[in-house]
Amino acid sequence: MKKILLVIGDAVELLDTMYPYFRIKEAGHEVVVAGPEKRLYHMVQHERPDDWDITQETAGYHLQSDIAFRDIKSDEYAGIILSGGRAPEYIRYDEDLLRTVRYLHAKGLPVASVCHGIEILATADIIRGKKVTTVKKCRFDAEVVGAIFVDEPVVIDGNIICARTWHDNHLWMRAFMARI
Image (tube, rainbow, N blue to C red):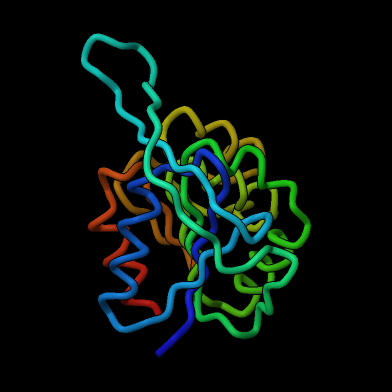
């Protein structure tokens, strides 16, 4: 059984988080939920109604983190999942989280990002020159640090596995699970 980190914060996207959470457990691995602090976090749901030009956000479930970023022992993990939603916009500056992402990437372990999770990869400076995908509104976040944006459901470049949105979860998690 391997340990996989699942990174969250307030306003993390519900399906970006819960699909990997259960998929990893289903495969017999341990999921360790990590947040800025060890506490209860509020998830959100994102939809884009046909008559809206922007994404609608509504309240979702809650999820307790198992560990604070500062307490992560990076060498204990076989991979990391960076959920989307608005949380990455705020947690991407956490030095302990960035240290963990950089460590796992440098070790060649799978680093998976969906939607706004790309903001964490960009801040960690591990996607320069890499092909990535993300939700279209985060394309700039990837390109401004030198990544190459591709509008495909899943893009794999080395050990970085990216998806656009929760709509691509089945393909994204299939790619991640094949690498742990």
